[in-house]
Amino acid sequence: MLNPLAGPDHEVATWFHAHLTRAFVSVLRAFTEFGSSEWIGVVLFSLVLFFVWKRLWPSLVTLIVAVPGGMLLNELVKVLVHRHRPFVDGPFVDWSGYSFASGHTIGATLLYGQLALFILPMMKGRRWRTLTVSSAALLVVLVGFSRVALGAHFLTDVLAAIFFGTIWLTFCLIAGKPMRRSVVLTPDAPLISQPVLVRVEETGPPVQSFLS
Image (cartoon, rainbow, N blue to C red; front, side):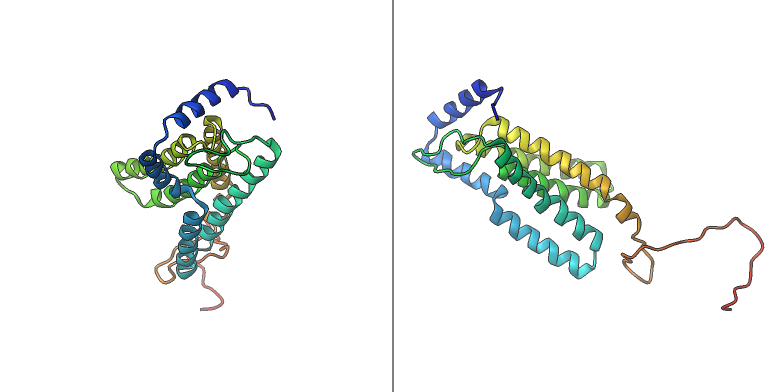
């Protein structure tokens, strides 16, 4: 698939590639690890154990569909678009695979975006909400920047990954609403994940139950 922004993409990639130094690459590699499959796998495994321990089944399903599901769809996009990387070989980098869209960036968008969605309902102050969203966005930007600067992806690869990840999280958020509504919190049971039917009647004289 042709890249309509190939000119600006190559200019940005070439500029960073020409200014790479060992110290700069070391910093960039530290940033890019926040979107690596290994790091995302560790975080996901920890969250899965936590949700299973707390029996938070809707959150568990949402996490699995949002993060691994979105990353698998991105692999399909890579094959369909079939775009090669800016630089396959270089003094500090050696990349393989397709470029569009950035796997590290979409992984970071999905993981930190979904974590922010989990945390936001617990944040009561506006300052804490802003800090949560800003922290997630900063991590995504750092990962995306590192991928462009290292020559692993074009700028449009990173922007597309952020866009696709945001769209997928929005879809998961909307699609998961019915499942979250089926969760009922009670004083005796911290979490009931099965659908519960509650009959609501108009106010009237008390009726004696046949069980009483």
